[in-house]
Amino acid sequence: MSVAWLSTEDANPEPKRARVDIQSALSFLDEDNIKTIQPHNNALVVMLRMGGYDVKRVMVDQCSGAEIMYLDLYKGLNLRPEDLTVYDSPLASFDGNVVVPKGQIRLPMQAGSVVVEVDFIVVDAYSLYTAIMVRPWFHALRAVSSTLHQKVKYPSRGQIEKIVGSQSSAR
Image (cartoon, rainbow, N blue to C red):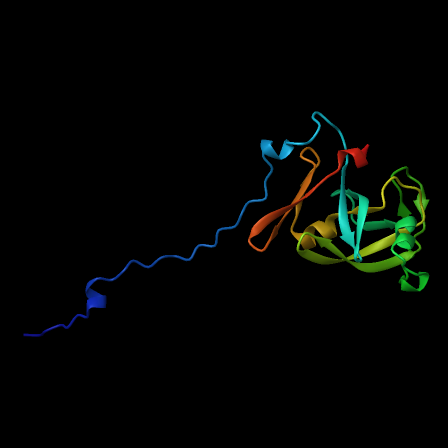
């Protein structure tokens, strides 16, 4: 006759639990429209911290492929011509004109608690905006935007942070 010895652990095994990482979804709800003027057709214009300064009238445009900084902002940030690196590919502006860039510069961009290095192409052209933020910034920040809700949302430290647009700046 054989005898099997069981420990109390073997006799009452606890079920194993799968480790589940819960991530918040980046989404927009009707409540995100609170404090926006509806209906509207405004561009998404925000304030961001750029190179240590709060910069207003930054347009958010997910359709473009290159971050743009206008020369007035470049000078306003006290950057010098020698801070630029060469960037000599011409760009087409919104109005269809060809613009030759002054150069390119990499600056830290802060959104809430997240800092992302961004390569800006500096142009000397007229614009109502100081800069244009586009896909590379969104991808680095892991962000999504909604012009309808006038917000950018992105994950940070296990939460969803948001940047709220300024409809008055967009008009």
